[in-house]
Image (cartoon, rainbow, N blue to C red; front, side, top):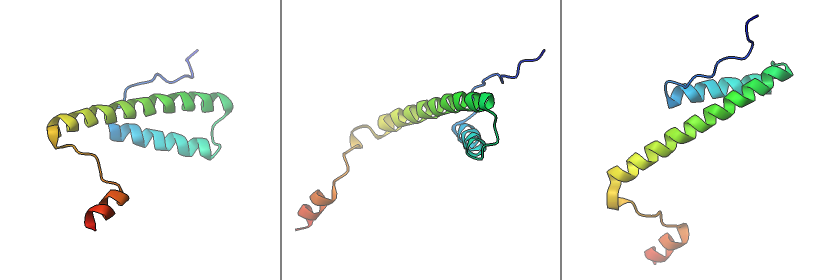
Length: 85
């Protein structure tokens, strides 16, 4: 008997992960999935979110390296107003 649980695979890219995640959310919100499939979809969604967060962290680290000392905190609206006066 074949297993009904799909094998989790690593997405090829951030965009692929986001597309799959959006499809999972749509199916879950539409109520198309039985309980067991909903739990599996939730688990897969959590894996995809973790993958996407890791990708974003990796890119953020790359940007920080590329920008070096050029990174400065954004000024708040109050600080901008005070500078204009």
